[in-house]
Amino acid sequence: MTTIRLTAAQALARYLAAQRNAEGQPLFAGVWAIFGHGNVAALGEALHAVRDRLPTFRAHNEQAMAHAAIAFAKAINRRRMMACTTSIGPGATNMVTAAAVAHVNRLPVLLLPGDVFADRRPDPVLQQIEDFHDATVSANDCFRPVSRYFDRITRAEQMLVALPRAMAVLTDPASCGPATLALCQDVQAEAFDWPEAFFAGRRWATRRPRPDASELDAAARLLRDARRPLIVAGGGVHYAEAQGALGRLAEEHGIPVTETQAGKSSLEHAHPLNLGAIGVTGTAAANALAEEADVILAVGTRLQDFTTGSRALLRGRTISLNVQPFDAGKHGALPLVSDAREGLEALTHALAGHTAPPNWTRRARDAREAWIATAATYTAPTDARPSDAQVIGAVQRASDARTIVVGAAGGLPGELHKLWQAGDPGSYHLEYGYSCMGYEIPGGLGVKMARPDAQVVVMVGDGSYLMMNSEIATSVAMGCPLTIVLVDNRGFGCINRLQAATGGAPFNNLLPDIHPPVDFRAHAGSLGAIAERAATLRDLEDAVRRARTADRTTVIVVETDPALSTEAGGHWWDVGIPEVSDRQPVRDARARYEAARTKQTLA
Image (cartoon, rainbow, N blue to C red; front, side):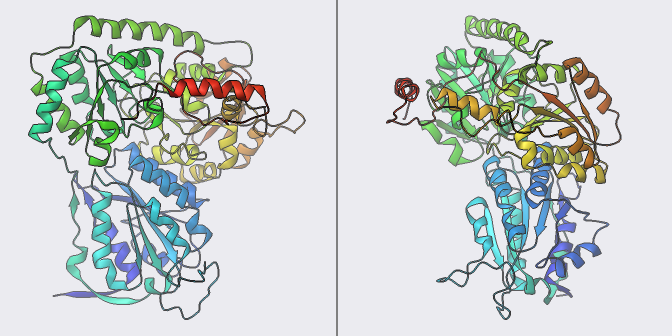
């Protein structure tokens, strides 16, 4: 056996650079790195040596760079991915939140935090966490519950096993999620005689399991018997590149389609059977038919509470078409374990000659047209201080079908889910599995790296902006221009409205009027962006159009009214309200809450 002597870090870098996807592209598009003690000496040197095959990118925040990596993978349907490396201590734990984002959203990212010394000679080192009862614990144990695969490398040769195992998780559609290899800093620098065959590389193709014959037969029989069938399209439709198969099933069999946050843009907005968003942030059309549907075909969705209306919306029998058996078995569903594209195509074939009752399909089309008319009243221009919906309308008018809108947390996701008219597949990119404030700007950067020819419009509230904005500077330095629409409503407007809806007194959400306003335009400009304030919605439209041809990131600040939101559509959401309170509004809200909970189905 021919061997080559390399450090563990050199072997890791060379291995990652050799991996390819099914199309022969480098599987790893690069490594995000913020160097410190624990990764700069050994891994930094190793990455420098392969920088022509495996580029290294520098960010300003470890959580943010991992968000960018996650968004990159999502934007190209998990066909490529990135790795992220940090020093030990706070650099590593900064990535834990991003690991949770990737875990919840089933997205691949390889996390390479530095770790303590395996030989323990200099213990305790700077930033080391010490457990008084377990000497094997380090800060990186925080990654265990938010990783699909976790290993701590305490000997160089362990990577002969650990790396292929991590790759198997990262590239498997059922188990996909973050893989963490905690790299002891002394081990990174240690040499080993590696088999040359280890660096030969491999093509990692997307596995497409087909449905079991008996499960397929049961699902087809249930759909044939349905009088009011409905499809719920989730993110798995995108990851399986099953948008065409979804459209064919809906069209050939007259079944209306609704979309989760992750599934939105599975069908273009103009499709006559697309009822739009479902659930807590759903359209009136989608939710009205969801309440009456007797069979729901849920495709590639986790069926989380925003989709199901906290189990009070979907009352029919559910068929769950999902590549992951854990998800396929939720809510007492009839499981159909399969790749989304393979499963949809098999169902289309199994339902040959069958269509849903014409009156049901007609009702769906009528409900869709009524909702479009209603939504237009919320997005129409105004001369007053606008709502989030009216800002969305302005951005929409200044965009085209290829524009990719990016968002994550606060009030914007609910309004975007209802109101944004998605064009091309993947043109709607919302992180709403973990609803992580701060994802928006680094997420937009990752999307732009994956889709450089598209205009990427990041819509972010002032609260999220203040949490994480440093990657504006990164986007400028990297030459990845974003269009950032910063909606300033002076605080956490979404949670302020939720607080009021649950009977609470206004408290700790909106900034008091006496607080000096933040000059967001000046701040964004100081990070290198083109920055301007839009005094009117027409100003906003013009600025979005100008940003399309700008040579660097543009930040457009627009003030909105925090009290306004789209009242039409939507559904109840289970948020626990105190059983005991000395305030009558809370007691009234509790009574409404208890009445709503009677509609939940727990089977």
